[in-house]
Amino acid sequence: MLPKLGILAGGGQLPALVIDACQKMGRPYYVIAFKEQADPETVSSSPHSWVRLGAASKALGILKQEEVKDLVLAGNIHRPSMTQVYPDLWTAKFLTRTGVLALGDDGLLSTIIKTLENELGFHVVSPDSLVPGLRAESGMASSKKPSQQDQIDIRVAVMAALDLGAKDKGQAAIACNGQIVGLEDSKGTDALLKRIATERSGIPDGGVLAKVAKPQQELRIDLPTIGINTLNEAAKAGLNGIVIEAERSLVIDRDAVFKKADELNLFIQSIHVSEVTDGQ
Figure 1 (tube, one colour):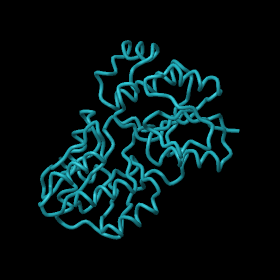
Figure 2 (tube, rainbow, N blue to C red):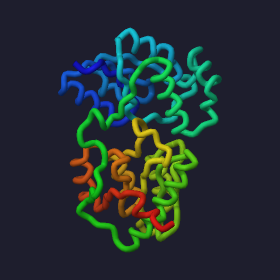
Figure 3 (spheres, rainbow, N blue to C red):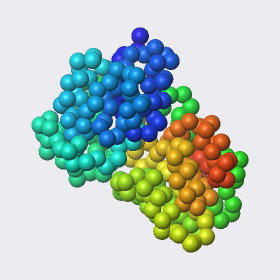
Figure 4 (tube, helix red, strand yellow):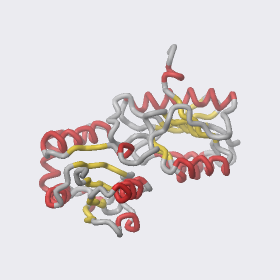
């Protein structure tokens, strides 16, 4: 019997996929559903507790009581209300001791993983180790192919996304006609796409979204991810397509994503960043 899995659930489809995988393999699990983040319908039929983001002591107590051994962080975390992030005593001590508030997202998440494993005795696993076919394979491509101009935009967007990631500030960039028109910030990719859709009103369509892992990426959490909603927002923003990093990004519900790409006349392509950076 595999050890009991604790699912730290944020928003989006990923928590549901992990829950489904556990149910299919008969693996015991327990969900910590973060308030204002997780979808109630996703966790309603599973053993779960609702916990606010700042209440780490409560979450850890539940996990220990449930005899959880492995942990997976699944789903998006959007900017919560102040009442949700107000730290309990354990969280306040952790923030003070580690100084993580001065770090970027990857620095924060890496510190959390080290604490969970080295100090608290959990084993953190990646979502794609639980859900088959989640990680983007090398050479994935949609029916529509990028044009010559798209290839230029791919290179520009990937280089910008890598630079952004090296600074631990984000994973995504948008280029159009050889120029960067948008960079991801703490609000995430969907917010970036919505902003581009608003700003380019009246401007001809075109451009590419690139999502790549940070050079220092902790590969068990927060990998670049696309799903149906990403495609819908990319279409609203007038983009021609999306490029993701092969082997270091996730595609939620791959068959549905590629079908939607065809419907929206968008291209999707997975690449190794070396294809862009070699010779630079």
